Length: 487
Image 1: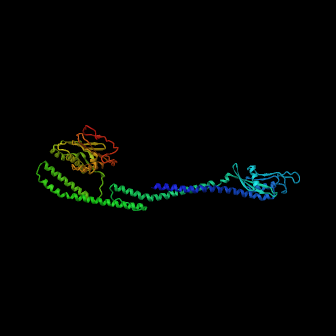
Image 2: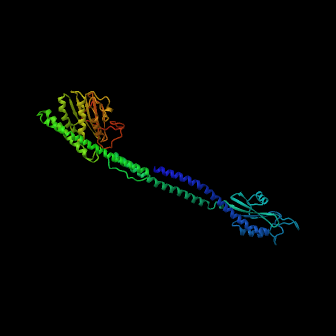
């Protein structure tokens, strides 16, 4: 917007300057020409009184020398117009044929005009100008005492016609440029006054999108932008209020789980000894911890973001071993074969331990929930230079529509799936710049691949959840041999 205003002002000012400067430049040129010929007319007028008194050559040469500023004046006296006047005729180029004879024509100075132009001026009896090499001449007719018409020729060089014209045009051009520069400066200031509030609005919108719920826009600038700032601030207040209500609702709903959890814990304590009883009590204890975590997080008034904090991380191998120990007991009860690979050495990832536990439990829970008893499953960990890949695969029937399965809340109602488990996994991977993809496993069923980025890059732009464009494949240090490539 700022540069658009500057361009408009430059265009308008330029047109105005051209509209006035071009005619004014032509007027200045005509004024310079009129000034030069006015000086020539004054010089010719200074000779006219002397011609009306005498036509003596010597006297006229003195008059011409004193009247002309340079050697650019000439006097042309016709034949028969120089006799009988003056006291001395010597050197006046006069030749008489006795008494009453006609005298010859007299020319004083250098003639530049053509004879026909001089004759035309003498016949018409009015001044005229004519073009000659190097400039122009003014031909001024003067009546002599004898009744003849003499012509005074004044040479006007081209340099005198254009004298001062270049300076005047330069000043005019400078004024035009100054006007254009001034209009640019004024337009730029106006643009800044309009653009700065818009930029602050954009920055506040970005901050709000990044989770900074305290972002607000100063209500200043033009009326339209002030109204936009008021609307944005009102929207931000609504967002804060809605999130607060959502946190309160989540806390209240989670708190309501305490009563059934207490009953469940008491019932689990009365189960006695045995592996199943221990697993049940451990599951109830973990469920109580998760509910407490939800309540504390929901009650926290600070806005939460999905960014991975500095120094947050865990050992993926340790977490996988721990969760597989938990799920292996249930798998043994259902007759499922379990395989774990790639967890024999530490694998550090920039993910909080609780988040990775939730993601693994969601995937393994889906295996137990959506596959028949006796279906085998496996968890593989690949440790690479810039990424870690966790594969959860099973020998079940697979997923017919992986893209629909990745959409939050679009699970089929027939099997009780909500799609929230895969969404938890996807958000964990995307928080590191990675992604989640669903394909066919080597066991014949579903394979969920969790790509966790290690180099701290920002999440890449995605066409749809679970797919990443132009991803470069990292060099993986595999801890076991796979019979096929990754999906």
